[in-house]
Image (cartoon, rainbow, N blue to C red; front, side, top):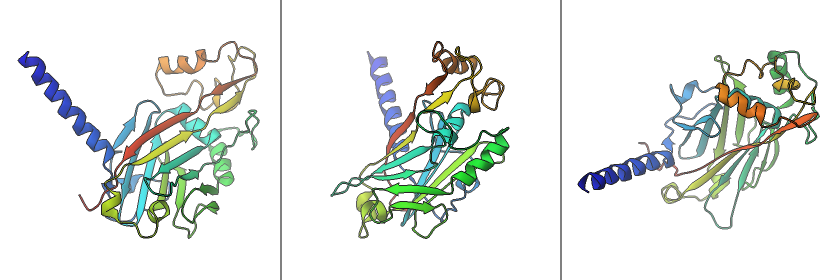
Length: 268
């Protein structure tokens, strides 16, 4: 009986310590450059979501919220580049406000047809990708809504680029006032949860064979995200077996990462 109680106490404190860490944003002592590179975030990412296989950091100072994430799964990486992302912020304010950043924009139409020419290799594809994605869409913020270039003077910035290790890095900077209003009190709003949702859009992939054994485009068996996929054997089978028997196309379902956090009120 004593052992069970002792174990329950340990589990209780372990759970609450982990939960507290996950919900507390770190204080950003110096402003970050939004350039699609993670080196100025430190040596490692603070959080990792096993479901989407995305690791991320988030911080704030007195004026801005900074968000950085990396997909570590090759299929998720390909899906981001093809289908695009929506990042949504849900502050607890009245009247209700929901801020959404749409970037990168989808390269695929709903029917699976590409909006840009198929590239011969990943280098050519990524070059075309960056030429296509020079803007982001924002909606639901206090004043900065519309389509803006990645480098602008609105205060909202977003950038996705590839790091030297081949991984993608996505960064966002948002003025706190665009979520909470001009007269926000950081001490007060840091007591409330801020929910963040990262949604990787679904994608329809055209195939060459009816049995989907030779999938076209970025998911081809011999292409960048086919046999070179770095995930486990079971993960590769998951993607392969899920769509057996369908003809001419298959759908990769969207992926969503949702979590709550509390802004930092002062330096840690």
